[in-house]
Image (cartoon, rainbow, N blue to C red; front, side, top):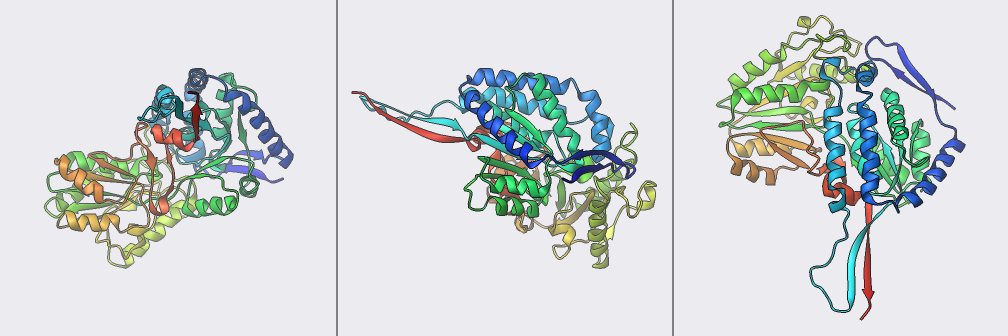
Length: 461
């Protein structure tokens, strides 16, 4: 059986190696999880939630160890303190709303002599295939509500963040969950496909690339296994003429370059009203130039390496194509001494003179590059925002709430923001359209994805 290896982006050294699970061990994990889930589903929701909150406490207690460990695995600077503020917010929110979200639905029209309601039953065994970019947050979006809803969970984490799966297992064990109800599995891609194709799991949640999503769909073909897929993105922002310019610049720079741009909902393209365009670009470029690219273990570093050199190479190619077609680069890579060709260390870049014939404006970059275009009005901005095969989030920067809502109704994304970006509200459904995927996590709708309706029509009169 092959090994799963994590190569640190800091220096290209092997950080950790783990053997892939034997097929017999995978089958055993499935069997044990199934047995545990049959009893777990009978446990009251409040007690299930209490277990998940104990898991949260155990995870939070490890934060000081986890922050540098994350930097070593995927490159996020330690100065940002990891992911646990959002992690805690999401877990506490879903635990707090579970009783209401999972309560039976009673039809409004009572009928004498009948008891009628719709119950939410757990699906059974949930497989979470988690990504490396936000390895704690993305995984817990499904894991916490799945367990609270009465399911068992198998976690297959990305090779780049293989230690994250082990941290989940340690915290779950500390929380005292029934044996085998949660299991972290080290699997190859082929093993993952075979597990899905076997029909042994009842739901698959995958966060990753569009091609990865297609592979998951192919593996599940014919099994009728429901899927939750959050795939690629090319999230746009529109800065209207009435926007608070300084506020928009500050937040959009952060939305574009936080985590080295490796965010599912990171801002990758910006459309600015012509009346603000020049001042916006000047402010955006000036603020971008303040980033410090370097070793993520250094507290002074504000921009770490990308997770792998090949990701940085893609952005270098996109940028080169744009420049060859007439775009202008506003950041001199020489101002970032750590920037080196052929490595994951990549300077941030701001491009103007771009259009939708360039891949940097239409294909996912998932890194520290952003293109900015001038627009004359809302209609032009709306057409450009929707000119994409992706649809996760979009942000509108304006003082006009009504107009933001009107434009939002026409924007083809799963989430519309006004005066914020790159954020996930656990009270709202996290979902996408087009090639960004299907399904939803968090909110009441997230619980519905992890359960099935069961109707009771009982005649007693």
